Length: 378
Length: 208
Image 1 (tube, rainbow over the protein chains, first blue to last red):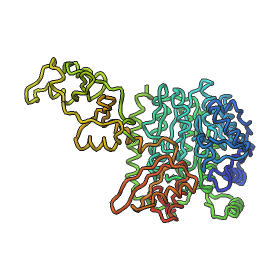
Image 2 (cartoon, chains in turn cyan, yellow):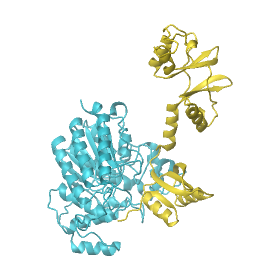
Image 3 (cartoon, chains in turn cyan, orange):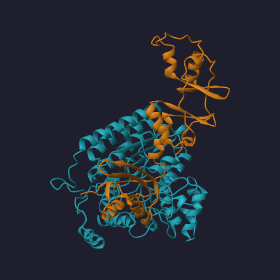
């Protein structure tokens, strides 16, 4: 089941902002051009009360006031009105529409649906009391809270290149929520957190896992640690449902970060996630989108997500008409194939520190597993 | 950052008449390594776990002292101390040069706190740590008037808030500045800084 509505594109920080609604327009038009687009389920927008299950009154009031164009003096204290997360008219509703989609996904899972793909959301930086990093309301946490209140154990997997800090902090002391974030190390990348020693507090100890990766990590190393960590953690935690934040910004073309995944790694990761859901959560899995700031790469990664999710065959080339239209609109060339180019046309130059990077990632994985094993495995 | 910002208080102390054995149990129980010895409200000495173990060991030049020996017999009497308003870096220098592990903090002759190497590590973590969601910029500046101002002025001009700034001298007449800024878009800032002639170390320019 796919969840989407055109109003997702109201979540728009304005021209030039990387978190652009053009990504959704490109993606849906590509899926249409490929002939695979089916009428999605249009979710209701989340209510104020639903947002308040994970956010403070203080924050929500300020988002509402700023949405109406009122002057709010202490906005910046709440992470709003900054260069990254500026305010725009109707922001509150636009954010609630995205929350509504992810929450609807959670409802459908609870009603017996196995696989749900929410083509939006994934606003993992939003915290209890503040907006942050393009994220106003945390749709993922609202969905997680809904599921845990229904008595389910939730595993949250975050493959966005940035640490899933908002989700981690909101559920930091919760026993029934496993968070698992793979990201470029906070030593170098926003938001700066997501170290291996952040493992949860109180009842949540050992259920918050972070695998910070070296800058310039490539496909092989990423997949190696992913395959060692994710099934291990899922098997130990025994979740009822898997929620996946599918940011596409670990791709080598991404202008905001420094990992070097190709679409081939993404295809492998997505197939593995579906396998893990089959093995550990009875097939119950809810995907959202997330970060991804190269239009060219992000749209191809999410098209892969849609196709792999539905078990459809992967086309080699993208439709000519679609390419022509978007190249004209963006005034730049697009990759004409679904996958990235391969050798001999290597997509990026060889990384001399490749082996060292792989070794350090392995070491980080060992440290993480040592730290959480006593709490997670029992 | 001042000593009063990093010191521990209230302080756990012992009296000179306490026995070595009692003092050792006390150290273990409280999970500490340094015991200030106080008589009539005055600091009269300091006893570390190392002093204690040596005093009661066969390696003690005068032979092992029995566990019933009073603390006063094994303590160091000449104690190096700090004042709450001393800068942390001065406390660190005193400890480094004397190779000592702690400084009792005295105010008007009263023991008001303790600073240990661990507290200085905490201070380092605070100086270098991440307390707000932020990205990292690392820039090498020529060591001359106005360069740091140029950097921070550029960031202010872009509407970027600086959460923390750490700088240290580098060989060859440079200053390395590590800046934590409230944005995901550090690559964009780096590009702008390069165009203004700054040498940006992180984030790197991608050749593809």
